[in-house]
Image (cartoon, rainbow, N blue to C red; front, side):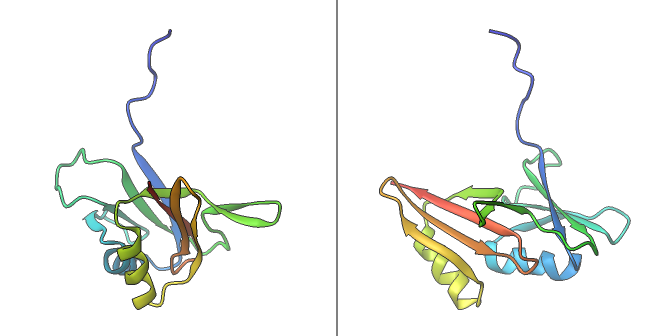
Length: 132
């Protein structure tokens, strides 16, 4: 077996139309934390842990773009998420998203897990799974 070439997932880059509005959306609806800002307005660093350790990972980089793009793909015409999270509280998250008028694309019991897909305010499709 060869040398392990990767240590961990470092960051995910997410296209957004408005960085400030997107920061607030991810904080309000998903409980993310603002990890930092570079000295320009086109990007922000978010994380899912409050830890202020500069090495906390993965980071979620919100990148301002005016392009008509988002973070998902299609398979047989069906939108598929690229960003997928694991949770132990999918029903509480679903309730929070419904309360916040977030569009839920799918919620299903797959037998081995509960799965939910939803859109952020920039039409990025996000998945969350609670394993049984």
